Length: 426
Image 1: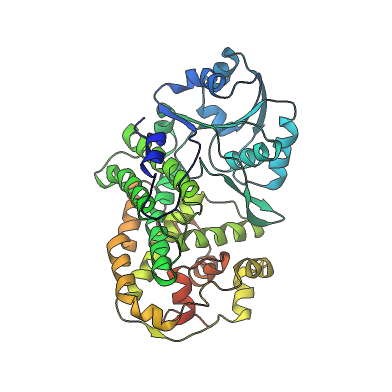
Image 2: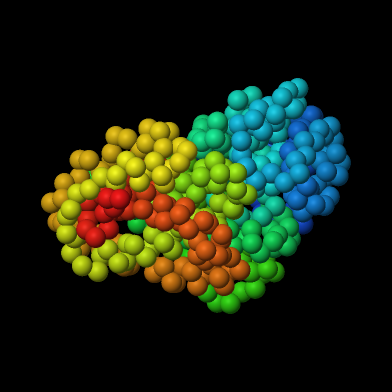
């Protein structure tokens, strides 16, 4: 594995940004044929005798030999198996807590929602936690937070980053192309997220780390390169490994930055809005990275179009009726999360004075919407809201109003409330 996390953390000592980037380095290994060694690695790193293995039918099928590797290393394995876990809900995490009582550690075999319900349970129970990843599909592997649905609303809670993260490259490469495309979509969202972070720092002096931004962007470029060069997304081991390394590094950068800024901006706000509206309307969920990739292309379209001309300021607040309609039935909870407005202190004069710098960031650091859509299609993923099956009204609400999803300054928030003709009033 080329991702040397201890060396990477050490390289950020005495960072020019002035912030101390400290983290106890987890044990991370991505190798071909690693499944057979998983039990021995866990015994060496975490010890214990009784292990709770949490997976679903899909990840169980994707992990042949894992159960045997655990029992062969001397673990007494208790299994909690779901049919097809796509939503990380508090009730499921509470079930994991109940099942984990009396065990020595929790192992999540899978990605995304499986990891999140387990990391929150491990946090609550103060148990060691490990992940055996089965697909490079999202960037939260090393996250210390868990986005769980609580009473219908997606809430980010403190959780536990894994002490051990393992992946068998053979399994990663064999994972469904749509999962890898979702992973690439999540990574592509870093282009707009990093730009939002840099623009916010330019306008407000918010803490920004060029070193972390450079590392994050470099990892994204490494993962995107095989697709640009025509790699087969369904089989290429190098592509699968590059995805896994970049996604892992993304979670690490969040930890080291002390903020999700390196990985989440306007594109994630759109994704989160779609996610909670899907749940509220009883629709089958989309993969997180699928939503993020589609949303990143939409954000790119708006940003590139906005910087074509100098800004004309026309302050607006979207009509309450329009927001109630767009956010139904979650209007009150969304608005509570968004206010007070983080853009309130940014003067029009400040935006105008820095507009050339904003335009340069957009043009130099964000691929165009069409370039993003081309990459997603080459990876075998959905490239537009229509292709992904996002309802038309939801797609429109995402682009217009999703900045309310978080109390965070993004260029999208400024455009939608301050700059004509992008501000919305209906």
